[in-house]
Image (cartoon, rainbow, N blue to C red; front, side):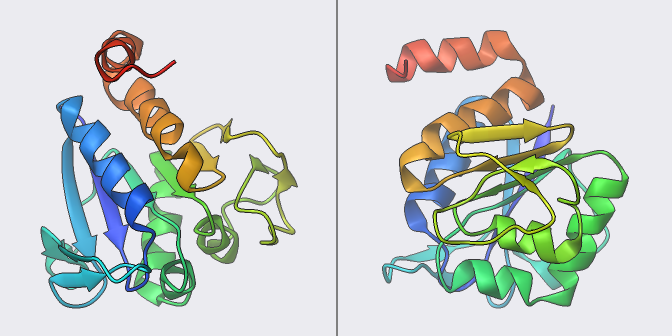
Length: 179
């Protein structure tokens, strides 16, 4: 069974995080939500979520994918955490999926994994080392990025394509009435 880690930093975008976790779990992908600090994490719209684990407790375990939801100040908190930078670089070096949505690609930029790669993010954020595209979801090798809350479902289904296969994602699209 495929597995994924979804990092939750204080100030994360709730729609993005919950949509990603929900869709991946519907696809029977083992998802672990991981907070940077305590077990309870508050989103950018003051919705608190109980994470499955803390980053310190997860330690060296890896998954098939690491996913960074956006939101502010959540994305900046991800970017500014040296443990997150190390994890992103590790996943990238191991050619595992490295995924970020909304403002969270700034963390991928800071980790140095976007150099010369096609990527996207929420309008107004800068990815100077990337080849910026305005598509809703952009893939380049093992890196997948997306624009924001309105693209969270497409982004999550694209992750399912990679982690569980297109047959599973097609079934989810039908079942959830996604075009």
